[in-house]
Length: 117
Image (cartoon, rainbow, N blue to C red; front, side, top):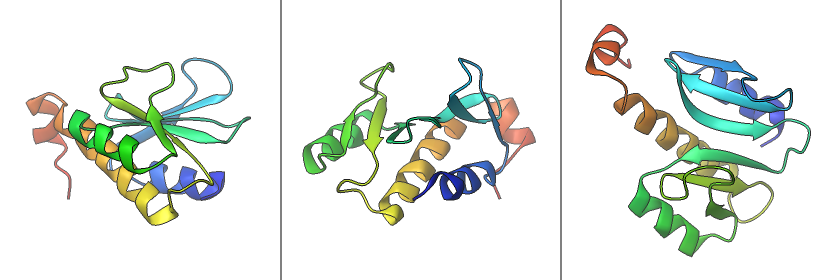
């Protein structure tokens, strides 16, 4: 998945916003203010995604492209290397998983005001 496809896929999600809160090269996608994906737009080789801890371990054991999250909490975040053993379909599923996990962690009031539909 090239950067344009990834950008479109993430930015079209309900409640998604994007920005550069850390520096001018780390593109961050948030759902209602909480991060669900980070990608370096200058060195486009990987993406950081939130993940259920048990599923994260399973993915790391199954795929060489999946590692503990770089500069992130290793229990809850994975770094997915592009152009390795993760295809675009699985990458989209992992982005969806991250998005839904972050959404579910939002305060009930926010979820009630912004139900996924």
